[in-house]
Length: 527
Picture 1: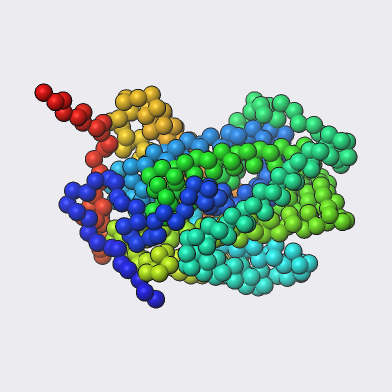
Picture 2: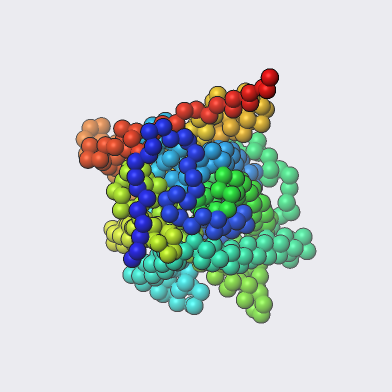
């Protein structure tokens, strides 16, 4: 395995900007369309809707569409923070690099750790879904319920997607174009067919025409219900930042990735509102029968909808099966695109000697991270196998906990954008809005969601498990909260240990804090 090692000390007075591709990655491999596709695929739209829509409807009922719109707002604001920071520093470490340059090495390191933790944990869930849906697609429903075989199939998916990422970024992007096209076409067909049947009067009992009241947040029963609904919905937008994590492999690395991130969030809003509204109109918000709030199928509302919307005979049967295949490809595609940002975050951290330098190695022919990509695959397999051996309930709670890591590193990015550009915010109205107000407000909202999630997740009856603190006052805390906070605290311990063992990064020798952006000096006037 031929590799090159880009890890090295920085120059004594480095600027914030770093040349894209200097770590050995393949520059100019992706354009805007490919970046948008990867940003969209990373969120797994079909799977996100299948797993979350029922939970949202159970909490806020007919106001689910406005909750999806409100959940979009903080993600859109943070996407602008990514866009602005990337324009001045297209580094594949994203939050790690920007947090370090702006707030110092400990903040940056924890931001990078949060990215890695969230991605490793979600890989377990995506692999589980891919394994289950693969068996369902061929009618092997018994195997789909068998822990050993679904785990085995999930491991196979992780290995396959890791190999694709190892072969090269272009193969990854081309595969994503195919998978995402299938996903979006079938989702749109589902939404339009559902609405068509509603307005023709052939939808089942409980259906209703779309009403403006569905988009009125004041119709929601309580502030607590609204908060929990948005909290459940906000993280279905997570993943678009992969478009920025591949910035060093993108043409026009300063501008294309940020544009792709913003475009991805807007397209996700359109997809989620269309499908969420049409599904609600067709199936209703009831908690019995085919209602979306029925707890019997709240974990997967799309499979049941497919048979009802498309039918079970002829072409309808084919479309219903294609819907199952689409959820499978959605989770599989997201498995692949989850590896991409994690490997590149680890690559950047290693290049700046924040973690062992082995992870900075890049394949000399494929021009992709070697140790970082393979390491991500191995870590995901180990975590997945161990956690399923312990308990499916623990797996479920670990998946729920990733919201804390996501809110943590997105919040750091929003505040980093404001602080880095603080001296140019008065230069123009655009700078004030896009470099200050938008990312700053996004950071505030994500910080609020972090603490609100801590409160919700800590409840004993939230999630599948709870644990009793072994010393007074013997609190009973939810497993989701303990997993999320425990993962972040574990990172803090590792960081402190590595700071003692390899202090160069933490002294600012390899990635110093940057001077805040300033307005360019005026050109000298000729006399």
